[in-house]
Length: 442
Image (cartoon, rainbow, N blue to C red; front, side, top):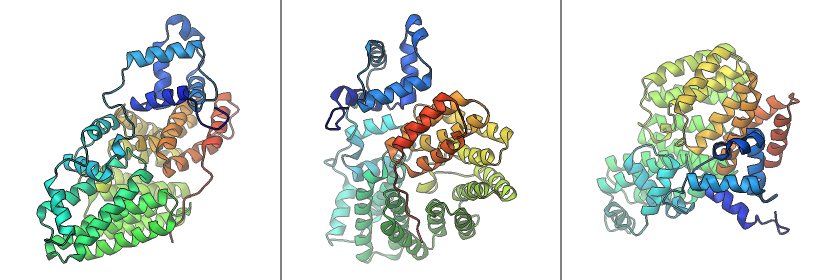
């Protein structure tokens, strides 16, 4: 790295080219291995050492030598960059992009999102957006098309957060909430008021999450209260239950309180929303397992698996993330912590069926950390370190508190190992881990 602390251009170029291909550092290491001829391959170190070199290169610690420079050249040539060249495109107009993603109503990988962002601009004539502006100006009350526009935009924000760091989306989401508030103040009809209240609640739970991720406990608590109020006004208990589920992460490590919050949220929702119920049961099981409550954890995760089998995850915006791979990671977390290797292996097999180049980066933070912990306990040290490095890469990119939380558990488990690659990873992790802790909501 240069004396002024700025990464040199060649280091930024390696990182930018990797990100434009939607690769983790582990992905790039695999491609470097595949690009090597037999003679070069024989001289390459193990995967973990290659990843370590990539980290050094991207940090500007030292320039790639002739071997790595040639391997990079071959990889870039074998895998041309996607048409979309600019990483900032998804955040050029988050409000319009969120509406577009929500209207499409389907899962998409990061590359598709980048391509979509390249063709989505604020200058596009959107009739619902024009109506929204008129309604905000006081010229008329919101109609069905205007509210549908806001509903779609809310769904889009929940999908975007799987790909884009919350700190990037948070200001636009607050703008979205302010627009909803202004329409509610305009005195809409009761059916429209209820729909807008639901939009406000569904948006507020995500705003609380983003504020908490950013370390702003006061704003997180304010948005959480808004979610509860909107839930009551709209007579929509799942909103309050969802906020309760989010709050299970916001206790500062107070596992007993997390269990109580999950149990209360389950009481609130009853059987009205299977997907949300499956997620809350999974959260209850994860926290109970960390408390050592084996019976409680097993009962909850087994009920969660039964409920999830019949759930439709697209019914509410906040459960769209809970695809089979992510749900299996909750099972894995429980079975791994309860030291049930057969059940853990079954969950890991399920996860691997759903991992691929299109897996959302935010999922990788949690899923790969859980897999790293399990592999280490199974004695697969090298694979555990590779997975932990990938989780670290994803967590750093997304600034995701849950990723740091899961990796804290992994590195604690690694503490007793004398393996050199494990020790190297723990040193890298210690250097990467932010010192700030997330706030605990009252």
